[in-house]
Image (spheres, rainbow, N blue to C red):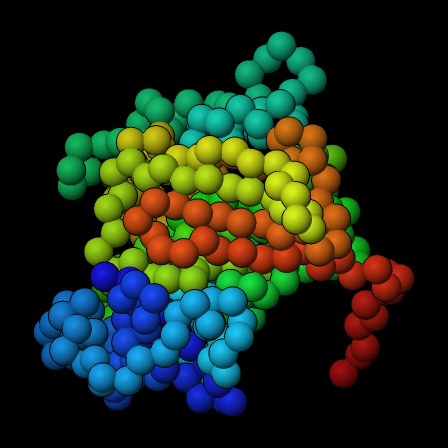
Length: 330
């Protein structure tokens, strides 16, 4: 089952994807509301969605292409308080990405911290059921204000050095009233980052991640996460500038999903009832690793099998002069 969130004129709705049609649900303006209701009624999210179909439909082709009064929203969010949505991620979970990060920072024959972290995952990131394995790399991206939907631009800010795609799968979570994390589903994502900034020094990783990012267009409620094949493309005008086959899922990763989730939600502050979490699981490949520099208007496209229509976002570069942010006394 795949769901989308839509917005038109300030109003919102949730719809069930059925081929080229979107079946609008009655009574729920957001996946957040739908999940709260499902938890309250002791139901599965998908079951409540299935029984809430209103009979009203929208043309998915028109919505997806931006030709409808309705526009796609991120596949998960906090609909009223974006500051209560934590966007984070984990890296060095896929060998290809770890190798590219390793190459970015390698200047000696010694093993880099990037590759060492990946190997820790290979050795201890897949514990037996019910056990905690080694902790993965973890990073903060921002709150819900940085989330962008399909077709919305991802920003290289005026102080940025670069902007590049990171094609990933992300989990969407809601913390229930008892402080228990509830996985609402999985979605495609572009964990857009500043790789030139990070390449200066790996200690700049944290600030290189503080960029807009996207998820969607669809939330897969019952996603298969064993082995997921995909493809990432960079489009410039009518040309495919770069394309790469990618993969994700537990079979392609050095950590189990349960281990990644444990190490994110083990922190009490990450289990505050009513909060939403968007957590990226890591990339398999990205164009910067092949020496590509994205330009204004380039379109980044991410697609994983079983996750619905491709996620597309253009690059927008803020060319205005950088300026000091002055802090005033109170």
